[in-house]
Image 1 (tube, one colour):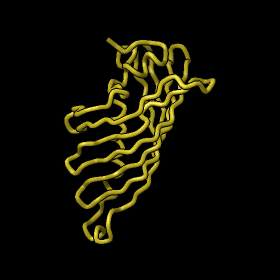
Image 2 (image 1 turned 180 degrees about the vertical axis):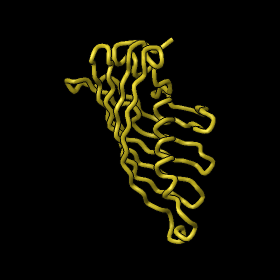
Image 3 (image 1 turned 90 degrees about the vertical axis):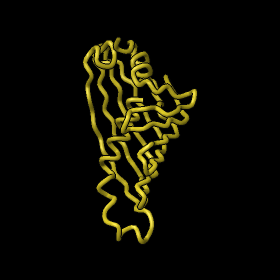
Image 4 (image 1 turned 60 degrees about the vertical axis):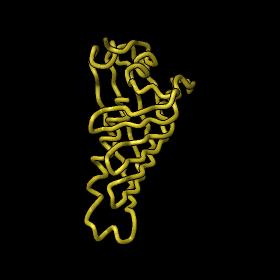
Length: 163
């Protein structure tokens, strides 16, 4: 899932400096909380067959262990927009990432929870996704998670994934 890989990679970049020196590990894992936001726009043909815009804010509550492994509890609030039609979906996800010392990430929770302007649920995906951000390889995923970001968001916003 492109979104999950990008989000996890961004979070790793934010939390990595918190690892600090070895003296800090004498008292156990470090607890770090951070909040960050970002946005991007994909032109027609890059992700969907329309101009797609995304804005999100994520809060990460992390436990970072001396061996480089990590447990992140994450809440993501996002706005997905079909810029060609103005159609908007909002999203709130709750998930946990278990990052092994070798970098492989097991993500568990609600990875899609899209609502329209009336508050009606449009898409919900929950389960487990295991991936290696270093290689981009999806190791495994449960049946109710589609790891193809465009295959989920583009139809939900009234279009199709880019060819």
